[in-house]
Image (cartoon, rainbow, N blue to C red):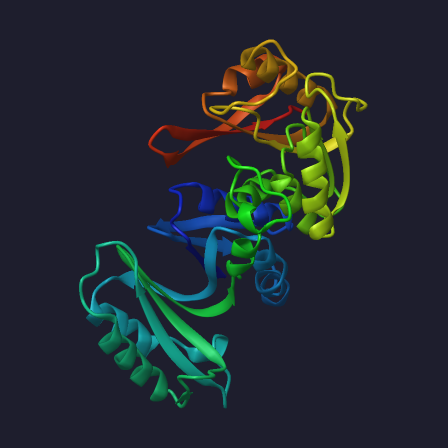
Length: 347
C-alpha cells in the first residue's frame, strides 16, 4: 500500500531521512516509490491494520519535520483534467465507508502549479459526492488531500504531526536557557535519524543544556549526558526534570568517558564550535578526535553516532573507526553553516 509523507521543507534532505529512519526503528518494511518536492511516497509492506496503527500513533508522535501522513489514492500529472479523471475513477471503499462524511483540501507545493486550488477542491468534492457521500466542511470523518507539485498526490489523511509541541520546547521556553543550541525540531530529527528506540541507552557527551537529551528522553530512551561546564550540567538537570526524562548527568571530559566499552545504543552530540566554550582538551581538533574515539569505544557495534559541527567531522570519525553514512549541511545564518555527520560503528 502506498503512503505519502507531506514534509516540512525546512531542510532539503533531513525530513526525508527522518521518515525513513523512523519507519526502520518502528520495524516497518518499505520500498521507496516516489519523491516530489516536500512529498515522499513509500510502499509500506504488511497488513493494512498493523501498518496504519503505527502511522496513526507511534510514528507521528516521533516525527518533527513532517506535517501529515496520507494513504494514497493515486498519483497523476498536475493537470486539472487528469486529477478529475482520478477522482471520478477511484474505488472509494478502501478510503471512506458508507455513511461517513468528507472534505477535500488542496495544497500547492513549490512553483510548478499555478492554477487555483479552491475550484479544484469543489470539483473533486463533487466527484466524491456523486459516489454517495456527504460533504462536511467543519467536522468530516475523512479528509481527502491533494498535494500539488510536479505530480499530484491524492490521498486521505491518516494523521498529522503536532509541531506546536516543539515550539513549546524552544530554548527560550525551557527553565534554563543558554544561546547557540539546536532547536527542538532539529534535535528530534537527529535523534530519529540515529534510530533511537524506547529503552535505549542514549549518550550526548557534550550535552550543554540538555536539548538533545530532552528529545531522546521524550521517545522513552534512558539518557546520559556529560559536559565540561558545571553550570551547563546544572542547567541540563533543570530542563530534563521539567520534561520528565529518565536521565544521568555527569560533569567531565568527553575524551575520557567514564563508561564501559560497547554499552551505549546511540550517540547524538553537538560539540563546541564557532563559539567560545570551555574545553578540557588543548584544542578543538584534539577535542573532536578524542571524543569521537571515545564514542566509538563505548558505542555498541552496528549503532549510530551523529555529530553536529561547523566543519567536516568525517575525518575524525573515520580515524576513530566509524563508517561514514551521510553528511548534511544546514545554514543557520550568514556566518554559520552546520555540518551534520552520520556515522555507524561497524558490526
